[in-house]
Length: 264
Image (cartoon, rainbow, N blue to C red; front, side, top):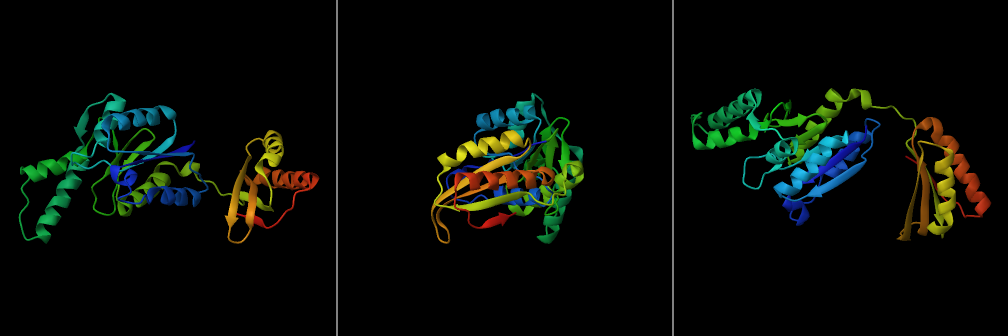
């Protein structure tokens, strides 16, 4: 099952805020032997979000969407998800209870009494309006939940909330996808190498070892290795070692200069 990430918000695209979700998602997946297949950034545009979520629901991938699930005019993710599914928004009873509990706590902290029918309270309840049939993702920070439909999961844009919610999804809904891998990646630093000369070998390795991916990362001004190509393989430990040895043998035949060996 592939994993995808959608990051929502004009503030990310404009540079007002730096995205922290991509690195955090990759880290949490890696800790569970999983990897990120794709990522996408979208602004606060309901039509664009609807199209992206429609693709996500149809993909069969495990998808996280971060941001846009609040109740302000620039939050569109809940409505876009409902439109993508062709379902109405419904106030989730458990979400309502959690939101009301949070409202009462905040009122107590401020020395006031919460009004269940006030305009502010009713607006906050909108944060619990999800596509019909949605499940809840618990929020350990303030208990205002996210939601999921199928394999697409919607969490807030705040990293302090979103990242533990991602962990809950991975550990509670998808423990069967966790893998214990001895080696994820093996690579070599090739000083002065050119990618064009390495391409036939890369194609050969991928053809010989199904499930193994070959990658090349060129650099022209690395502070330690200067101009070089990092050439490597990644995949399951069972087939990775044989593919790596075949790659090294092919490099020797090419007369390539082989430098540092990296293991990740």
